[in-house]
Length: 196
Image (cartoon, rainbow, N blue to C red; front, side):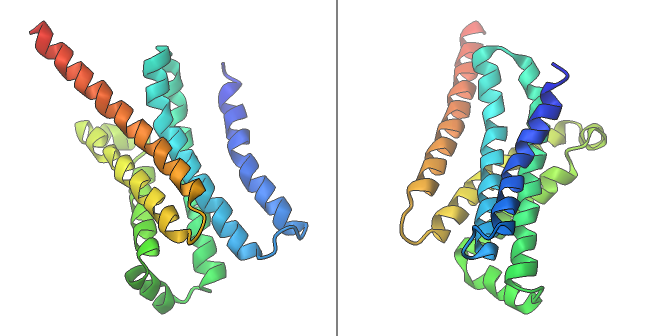
């Protein structure tokens, strides 16, 4: 069991290693666009994997799965940081005025930036010390992961101009994950009502 976390860590880095290899070997026609797309996609994938942990734990009864949720969430933030910094440094060349104009005037960037800000908050409060300080408020705060995931999917959907197949798949997966949570909570509520 101890080997699972290190193995998961390495697996989560593989998409970045692959992307760097493709760019370095000249396999990307537009390296900046490729890195933007790759890092953004993997930030979303990691976020959806983070949201998958709880349903898997509930279905399998394997509570040990919960120990991998924080790592997946932080890897989502890691890829989101890479996505954001690629946009800031390589796409906009640190032009603050241009970036602010994009955030205000281009809806897909507006929602993407909002998702990123939420992920920053979640990552900053993911430590054990933050959990102790915030107590019950920690759980309430970390429910922001749901709007972050919705905003990330919308960001991707609005970015794509023609073939929406991939963002539609992610939207469907997110819908299933959110509906599962709703179903589980309603089921617990009705069971508690029956018992009382």
